[in-house]
Length: 145
Ligand code: RB5
Image 1 (cartoon, protein in one colour):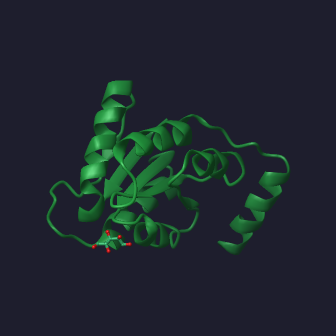
Image 2 (cartoon, protein in one colour):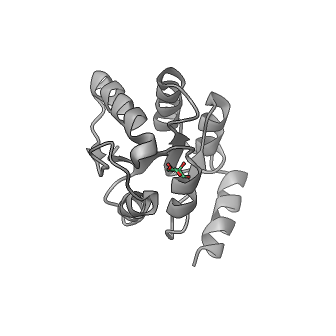
């Protein structure tokens, strides 16, 4: 799976921690920044990551800002993106099983790294259930044209 990750300054520390987890797990990824803790604008990072997922350069993305909200709102403006804000393991599982979410968003000021790592693990390892859920995801895709 080709994975891309990005964050603004509010999510920078958590992004770095998640990268350490991915390294430990031997999971390859590309980091689209931000690369320093200096203040930056989350829509810029969201657009870069979301477009790279939407055009097939990557299969999944992880985006982190302070709350996970702004960066998710921005990512969902890109056609083909289903970004899901997850701060619990149940949501991480079901955004994949029912919504075929292709981007996970989290808030670096909301949850700690232990929970975030578990959410990442579930997001990356859970498949889409398809069936009736595919019918509904296709309805979303129709709205997205
Ligand atoms: C930046 O201060 C903060 O607004 C941003 O990281 C995010 O939480 C926006 O939704």
